[in-house]
Length: 436
Picture 1 (cartoon, rainbow, N blue to C red):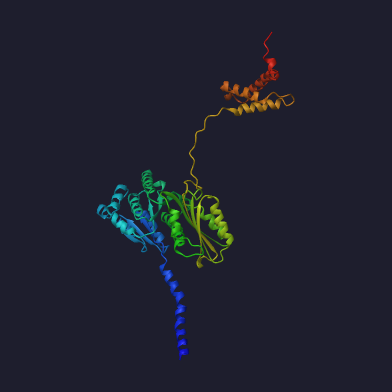
Picture 2 (tube, rainbow, N blue to C red):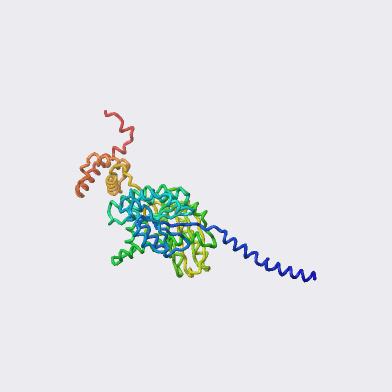
């Protein structure tokens, strides 16, 4: 009877023992906090960009914020609509009135605060130059900072054909935004001409910009949200984004086939929409995504190349596997502390050099002297150089002579130097002897 009880007890325990690991794993999965990211498109241009991105990127909240109710209706269904400033604008937008855009946002600062509450990272997307985007984006950034969210700005700058006034509005807005944000990415709309030809329509051109941004953000978001062999987590991003007003580089590229690693590496280092690269950045994060056949050699080459131009940078990297990346490699790259200018270096201001004495012609005369007197004991060359230089300085009109006159002058000076040669070679105690 006791034996039977023991067997019954064993049967009762076995399922419990078998289930414990599964229960613990499930609980662990439920308890792991996910990085909360919200992308907010501010104004008409920002809303259009976010609407396009939302079609391609999941696992994230998208919000379109605008004073124009009609523009909000055109956003994709994946984007939450946030209207503000209706009492001021009657839902008709701000045109190019930056003051009105700022006032509309400040009037509803509490609602904006509630919308941005509880996020780890807020990404503000705006096309600067208009009233709503340029006027209200700094208020959104200000609220995010007060909530202690990490805040990244992605800003498109106006086309040149949009006029100088719009450019000035954009520049002033950017100067207000820089000190409020942790970092920001700049995209000059003008650079779209690097990717299109004369037959490309306006709608298609803008869609290309949005799709490129979507692919870039998709790589960045999946880096934070998907598990990998080597994970990048929110603590890494916080380390990367510490500080204020730092220019950032954000890009993602995918390569396939035998040279997939080299292709993706080459493309990720040159964003066709940007005017700067990662050279000089002091903080770099990148994630490599591939299938389970990803080679160690490929990982090493990618890491070594990215680090090569930034020897002092703090580098964080991750590696993840996804089945849809069979025979493909994607690199998602994020660098902070970049320098403006193509290739990643600031254009150095031109420094005025002090005017130098015209030694070139004196040296040329000296060369003629030495060539003509190779067979004779040559006098001290430095004396000739000094004499010729003094002669050229004393008579500046000689510098303007034509080639024949200059040749004649040189020959005359050579003859004069030859006459003085004996005096140069006489010992000093004889030259200083008083005449009798």
